[in-house]
Amino acid sequence: MKKILIGLIVFSVALSSCKKSLEKEFPNPENYDKTGNLFAGMFTKTLYSWKLYVQDYGEWWWDMAGTGSMGVASYSQISQRYITDRYAWFSTFDDLTGTTAFGSENQLWQNRLGAFYGSVNAWAVIKDNIAMVSGSELDDNKIYYSLTTVMKDYAALLAVDFYNGIPYSEAFKGKDRLFFPKYDDPKEIYKSVLDELKKIANDLPGEYSKMSTSAKAVFNTQDIAFRGDINAWVQYINAIRLKFAVRISGVEEVFAKSHIQDVLSKNNFPTRDQVWAMPYALMANGGGEWIRGIGEAWPATFIPDIIIRRMNRNKTVYEPGIDDPRLPVLAMPTKFSQYDTLPAAGDYRGVNMNADGQKAAYVAGERYYTGGPYGALSEHLKQNSRSMYHLGTFARNEKFPVYMMSMAETDLLLAEVALKNLGTTGKTAADHIKDAIKNSTNFWYTLNQNSPYPDRSVPTTQPIDSLMHPIKPSTAVITTYADSIAIRFNSRGSVEDKMELLMQQKYIHLNLMCPYELWAELRRTRHPKLEPMTFNAKAMKPLPERLRYPTAEQQTNPDNYATVKNQDNFTTPIFWVPAALRGVNPYWDNYNYE
Image (cartoon, rainbow, N blue to C red; front, top):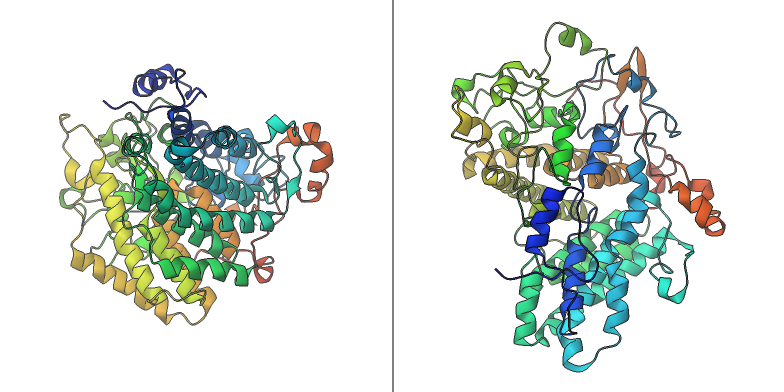
């Protein structure tokens, strides 16, 4: 086995079982001899950092299942409990003070700013050491500095999307004894990062060409994401440049267009889904990864109506060719299904944000299996009256990959570019949406088919394969559905009406896998429309706009914190929300679907 080097910073996880696997896979290279081990190890260490690409268990658990938890997935209506008044804490769903609702129990969210610095602090080590080498040693290792800079830049933009202004230009300067960095203008951070990413994308092929044959072999081993494929990295950079340029296009149109048009001119976006596997099986009932968080937070993993009803056209029984072809691999069918004819007769029902309205059905017996995802699959099929996220695809999928970018997400960004005339893509927005549906269908069926759950050696009376690993619909069926969405999209008159359909597709594709990305897009676009939370006759329509800064900032960096104190709340919009949308609340008045 080729050994991957993880720099001088120890890579660790919380539980010993995972730690043993990692120690076996990644020996500690403390004996590096300036032949590239330091730089290569730091690069790989950064790729594996929690909360950058690898999602961690603790944050997921607190977001979804912490005592009284109502987190990002809940407020964005990406995932939800089967709510009735038995969950008394939902009476404060509209409290955005951080006292009783959003943010109150989610102390791990305060680590999101710390996660920025912690996940990419190896960048500073590489930066300092790369300045001390030259010649062939520099040629062999500069690639690690460039790619770790890409990750540092990406992490910085994620932090801006959570907080707005953050310490950036003076960050990572501890060796210069600068321990209390200033908060930078978030717009300037975006501009600086996008310009830097553009330069790196242009420079990468030349940097790679200068590497020796042996150095390229090391890079191939160390690059756990793309296995030394430098063009895949360029494609990734182009895709995130597109993403973040689109994100600021509503407030910095000229600057955003310059980057959008530049990446469009290169026509070099991901040609495959950019995901990669962890070096060990994810443990659904143990370990430090997000799959465990989903498993332990299972009462909050029911699919909201705003997703289900967009996939099954308001009818409960799945109709191939009419309903979304991804439904059988994203959602668990309910107990009302005709299991002898799955997936055609699978029944799918979401949870409603009208807790009062769905109480009667719950009391009458439309409940769910309390054994959770680790219990008997047969009991899920007998008892669940609402659809959870698919157990085989999500909570019990020990091979769920690490997500960086996908072809479908890129397609949807291109659709918005075409819709808003931000650049010339060569296709209509509707055509890009059709591409997104096709690529997304491939994406989710591939993830589902790769899952080893359930164990086929366990006898069952249910058709396990057709339920847990349904056959992907034919190209004709997928195309028919994609065409139907394109027709609906083209029938909408205004840009905002079309954005509603576009963002519905983004919700379906990214779903529980990328809740923070969807929260950012919800805040930016005010789409898709959400259902009001009706609880004990009180209708609530809250919209958390950002996270609060860690309380430690007030104590350890008080002078610089004072410059952003006035926006340290959950209700001040991030800078990229267009002025015309800042007063728009993305809620319907009722629960009627078109």
